[in-house]
Image 1 (spheres, helix red, strand yellow):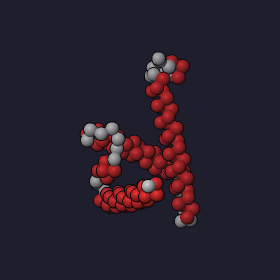
Image 2: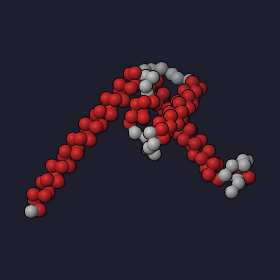
Image 3: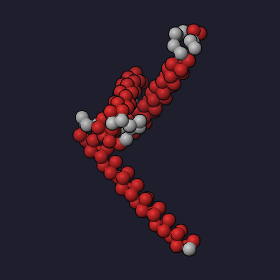
Image 4: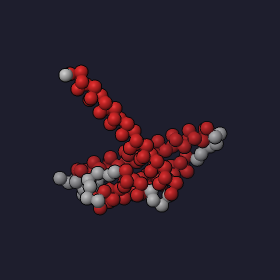
Length: 131
C-alpha cells in the first residue's frame, strides 16, 4: 500500500520506520544535550548548543553503525540475537573499552552464578520441607 499523501512512494511500514527513526534520533539528541549541559554545569563551563547537537548527531550515527555491526556479527555466527561477545568484538579497536567490557561481562557472569547457587539452595530447602 503506497502512501502518496506523505510525500513518498514508500510503503506504510517504511514511513512508520522513518517516523520511528526520527523520534529515536530526537530523543537521543535531547538526552545528549541534557547530559552535556549537566556535565558543563558540574565543571562550571558553557557548551554551545550547536556543538552539542553535532556531537549528538555523530553519536547517533556511530550507534547506528554499531547496531549494524552487532547484527552482522550475530548473523555471521548463525544467531538471531546479539550476545556480549559481539559487543566486545565491536570494541576491539579500543583496548581500554574492550577491557572494561570484559570485566563487566565477567562480573555479570559471576553474579549469575551466585544467583543460580542461591536458587539451587532454595530448591533444596523447599524439597526438604515438603517431604
